[in-house]
Image (cartoon, rainbow, N blue to C red; front, side):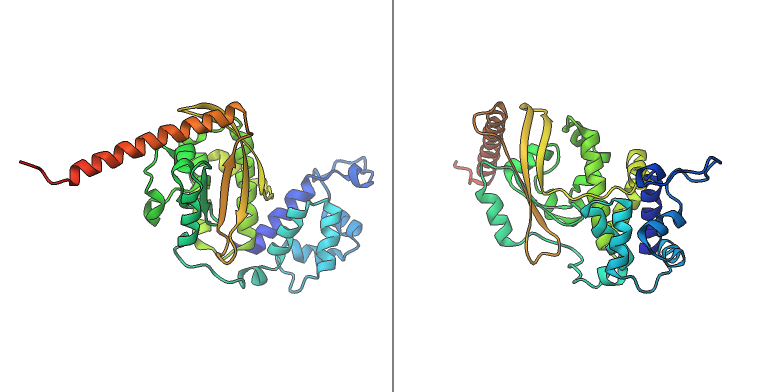
Length: 302
């Protein structure tokens, strides 16, 4: 992903979304060639040189100060996440100088122990691209019971939640408000892409989704940017029905972007009962599998 072209497209999308009337400009009665702010209008409102702004939007600016970027962000009414994204795109060298992660990421032993200890809480560890590095039994049953439980252990078969959201019909059907989830997933991926423009695996993921999902391509072209650390998931689980679960997204220190997501239900709610039922069902399946394995490995008594 070319950070300079991404910067230009991002700024153009935000200029197009801001009408002149919203910032106190009365449009000339003649027909405008752009739907949003012109470059010169934005430069005037931000009190920056039109030449400097044009170079920035074209990816030709050599040095960009915080003051200039913040003035542009205020004029475009960017959110905090969008302002961070703007700075990452405007300074790709600084963004790519952060410590690079290992080529193939793995969940640490302590993270796996933590997941295993969370017997009543669905949880999983993801990398910054949303590849599943590990999940506990209930996390697997909640989100991807149709996939092999050992999938995260092998990079070649490792599930990716964003790819599944757009290309895996069973995972897609899990979400009652799929469109909202899709928008959030793309916005989060945009933020990560801005921070790591040199991540080849991330670029390959974006390319794969763009080629194979018109819905993803359409959302990606809008340049949404947003991070999400907590919230609600409205699920329609094939085994236990509707659930409303809270989630927390916790960054794991020293892991180059790995994070742990855990899901909980409100105490005493139908969702808690459904989650408990799912836990019982998966525990029974696990016990049956262990029994079969013991029988298969036990010596035959004659």
